[in-house]
Length: 317
Image (cartoon, rainbow, N blue to C red; front, top):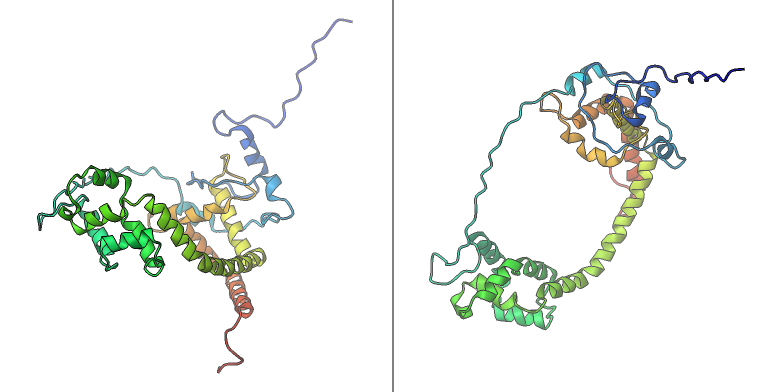
């Protein structure tokens, strides 16, 4: 028989969306979406979504996703995307002029006025001449170089720009103000900042190790509380439900989970009244649930029982 051209394969998925509305895998948004579709254009949450394969692993916090219901009508009124008029804020920066000469005397200052004041305040605490401080630094006199003194010295050392000015000064140190003379005598010690930082670290090591042990115990206790907290799980699932509602129809929607760094930005997402934030709204929903509030109280009581007590037995009630 004659050669016949086979018919084209049947189209899958019906009519494709208009170009530009959904990109790449975004067509799964409408097919897989089980929540409510926003009736207005919403503000967006710029989260880093966790893909389903990673979110649904056995050790994932998002393994069992429980959609949380909330009042979508009032929520959409609060977080509808509106075009805001831009206001220009003219912030004129005040330029600081370098004060070369002290106004009250003939002494020469190589610092600007604000830096002169700040350095002078710190130096007043040392109660030692610049020459004595230099000797203590060069000999590593730990009787004088306490942690507070070391931290203060590091703050008053000259910056790179100030060092250039100091080296360019050709007059005797006696012509300088107390702060500039200090920087000239102490700040020009070879590699002085690195020396002081190393000595400070050496002094802090025992205290740091002790503090680290306490911190690790707290972290372990916090991790156990996080893994077992049903209230936190409810909170994260509420954020996930709200975020998917706001991000509907975009690549960031229909997420199975999100990077918890997002929680730090919830207060920056303002409602249309410019007074409340998304965090305020979520806290209000959580507080409206007496069940979650009771769970939080129970968890606090359990944590208090686990904390070690300092003294002996009972107390008055």
